[in-house]
Image (cartoon, rainbow, N blue to C red; front, side):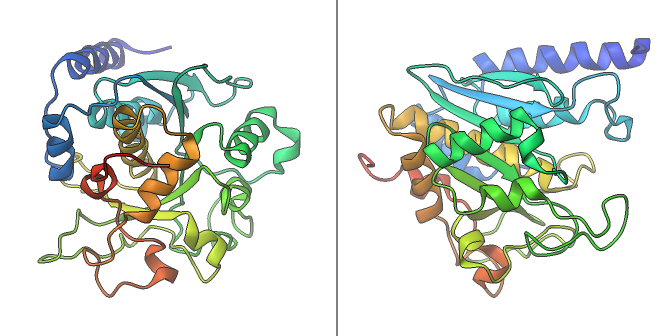
Amino acid sequence: MFNIKQTLWIIALSLSMTVFKTASAQQAWMSPEVGTAWSQGYLGQGVRINMIDDFGATCDRAFGGCHGAWTTWQAQSVAPRATVVTHESVTGVVGLVASTLNVFNLSYGFYSSLTSFPTEMALLSYAQSGSAVIVKSAGNSSIPVGAAVPSGEYRGRVDNLAVSLAGQPSAILVGALAKNGTPANPASMASYSNVAGTSPVVQRNFLVVGVDSNALGGLAGTSFAAPIVSGYAAIVGSKFTTASATAVVNQLLNTARTDTVTSYNAAIYGRGEASLTRALAPASIR
């Protein structure tokens, strides 16, 4: 049960999301490339972003509200004309909507076997078949994707969802930079973020984006990197309206920048920092 303060906070957040659908507002934590995309008319219109997250009574109050409310706000802020739909993480399979680009944001780790969980098995099948863009946070243990968590509640366990999505045609794993990078002022990996590691399979699908904790009111974690990329996928989809989920993913991966990060190394940064401007540059993609 929410108290009055929490209820008012959720109402205010809902109102802010409604505003973003009709009036875009560049924010300090965003890359300037987002505003450039908006000025060209690409705001995620015609794309559906599904947020699989925690929205219920058990949500983490350390974030000042539900974890899912924050990640949803980010995705909607980046792609203000996208249709953003929330789904409680403990619910069943979320189906695909025909005749639109379907994007799924997964800002959580998964340390059990996928085979017993229909939701995660469906998400994996979407990534395998290229029928939806699947964006997954890389994790916050300062380790390579696929390594065992060194401490805490999940000590000795592996994020099986991240491992399973690595290398799939329409999946992206997202790490966090400490800020948005530029060639003149490159960014380093956030101290908490998991990295790509030495596996070329993981490196192929690994992107990074800046998570400016100061501009985000103290929020930090790859949970807040993933919805930025989900928003980018929606923006790319709003330009290339006939592109498949795999084509959109490849466009983001193939246009990532390595000159905006400090001492680029694929084992750290994977493909590099996502660049919305480069992803939107061509007249068409296949």
